[in-house]
Length: 246
Image (cartoon, rainbow, N blue to C red; front, top):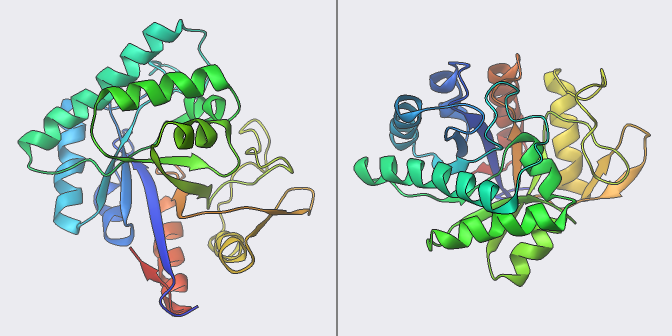
């Protein structure tokens, strides 16, 4: 697959402290902007690192719930959620302006991401918050998701995202983190998982079914304990297959 282009993205600024180790191997990053993690200092530090390494910068808004790392759904009025998402993106935009950098994409985090994939009300709230900033950005979304459909109807540019370090159910939802096989932590298994999606356009689920999937970008979670090794090995193996990480 010579000259095939692959984007590798990682969630950063979440308090793990591995940003400088990950940056040389990724092509885009999703910066926590105060919802589930992050503050002015961490956002600025990750932005500066991204600029240094030529990595595309994305906002990573979440339910405002640092206690649960944004991974538990919150029952919030739409207007309150809208304001929270908008503020998180704006806070990062203010830093980007000061650092003379630009926002390339937006990717919701955790429970917000998962709910927006299946819940039209949540998806519309996310889309309206993004539209309110009036800046041309790409939205990272799952293939065949509700939020992808809503974004397209609202003329927002999207990039389909798949997860390199997560296993899938037959309906293309992610296996719950409450299950022991939710995460992929072996670098060989992770590469095979990603390469199958790239080369066949299908993902192998936990039930051994092969389901059609589209992906323009692949995510490795920054809080995965093996994140640095996984990303480094994934990039090396993809490049050995003739692919470009961009």
